[in-house]
Length: 157
Image (cartoon, rainbow, N blue to C red; front, side):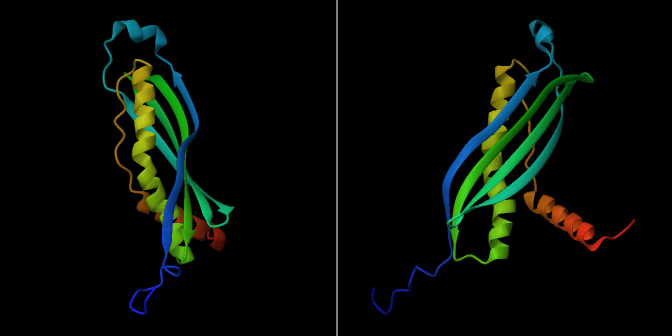
């Protein structure tokens, strides 16, 4: 290394080490009605939760839980729960920035893969396709932070 070249050892680094389906449960509640093939669009309710775990040695796992309930004509059609995870190696990054990345950007990057798996499961079950809208993980993280701050402050309504 010459004097003109900056040292890379102190630069912040993020590396995707692995991403994987951790858990999947899918219940098709319309099996007796599949032969009719007269499905109307499915109404969906989506629940999400992001959990971050420090694995040591600079490794961090970001888990995206997605729970989906689908209804067709006001009748339950499916119940699905899935956890999709990614492991990142993080070094030289400010702890607040790392926390923000793991709670916002990591699930945002994982979401299309997780949504595609749920869509494939629904199609494989003979149900209408799932149309999962993009999520604002930054907003979800900020809301959780505000709720945690209120709970920690012991405020009352």
